[in-house]
Length: 227
Image 1 (cartoon, one colour):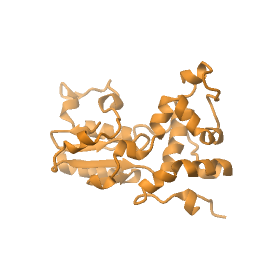
Image 2 (tube, rainbow, N blue to C red):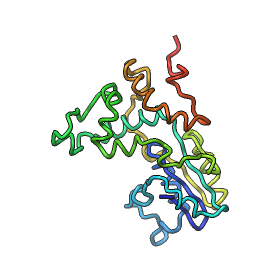
Image 3 (tube, one colour):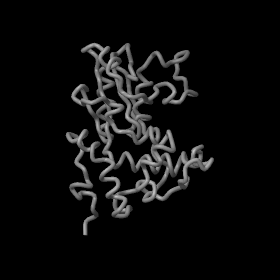
């Protein structure tokens, strides 16, 4: 589903765990169709207002050439790390997973990161939430990133806000709406070699798809701490 602001001809395709909550909150500031009595419908969650759906070519191609099309991408490893810290540790999605609670699948509901990433395919099958947040980028963004006018990385969100302001003439505040509420950050250095090998295989195609934007740290070794 294309998230479209028709008045200003702005189209956004959301990628889970790539600042999509923050971007949706920003879009709500310029989308008059999402206003109620002159103000935002504060009781409505951004994801209810703008559901994240997979890419559908016919909906994308229906937009005219005068539309501004953009997306936000994230380093694939960092996206997976965010999924674990936010969906598993903070939100405890697996604790509430019916397949795990009922014993349909034999998986711990609070796995450490090594167990989670070594068994990520099993967790994807068991939990719809984990599956949604770890599906490949191209399923949400489409097969060709060249179809976008702009492809932003997360550190470039202020630049996105400026673009939206220039197109709409409205002030756009880009806040972090879904920052993981934990102080400790997970890195590749925290994982076992076996886990890194599992991740390397899992994200290989993702880095090919995003080659123009990210280098694979598991191939280049750039994740290693300085001696």
